[in-house]
Length: 356
Image (cartoon, rainbow, N blue to C red; front, top):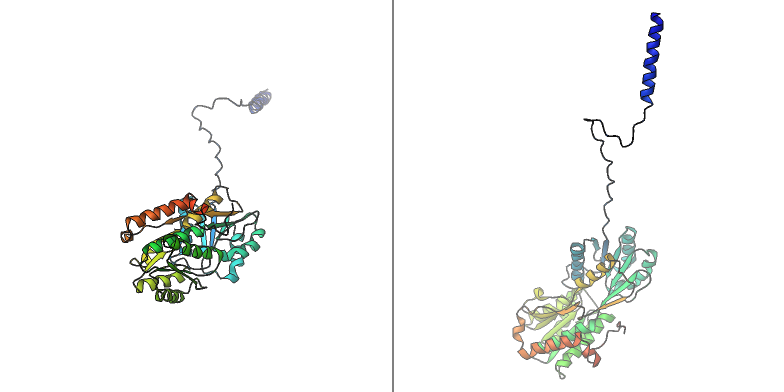
């Protein structure tokens, strides 16, 4: 009997255990008091957003006090103001143009900016191989679907205004403008310089010439001195670092200089009266902003005084050497360029790149 009771008790216990194990827990059942609350599932960590990236290729140096340095400064500003990732290569020679572009494109840069007309042919060759990369050439000759754009200054405006300033500062009636090469955008400005000077004084002599070098400082000084020997008392030059020699010629001879295409006052404070500025920083920021905002367009983009890309620099006190009538004339010419009236009258020439 005792054995039967033991067996019976064990069977009852086993049935109870089976019944408990088969009981289902209701999905919304309240947790047992005092039991720990289950942790909520962790939110997935979002992947860090990739920055828009821009690489700049420069044929010269980033400390030439002119074209290349101001373009580089624009790249730095783009990094600071637009939050883009930046890189650059300077002193890139023509034989390496295509290779350098391909290297940056292969690294995944979103935009490649080439500083200068001389990069145009190489960009036309490389761009089709990287259709997802935006290529922008400053002073470029060409644009091409779907990813190559050209950004240019309306250089006759810069040259014309520089000629106006030179004529107003001249006492001898002879002024001079030196171009580094006869590339279209430089020739545009040099030719317009002579027209601007004659707009102020029809009897003025406007000397023009070409070094055919953008970096030979000694040659720039040599040509500047040659102009001074011909009576020029105000010089101007658009020739990258070669222009530093022209400024030196003016400074060491006690003559005056109109800076171009950046504010060159610091190069020779006593000689540089004022500068005509083509803001490379403005142009670089315009390029990068278009890329960042998804508005990049493979076309020719022309910027001038109306857009704020070209302007007269601060006079740094040298406006005291001009009369009230001279200063009023400067403002009148500026207004005529901005509102288009000088161009409409055929006084201010059009850029060869200008499209109606």
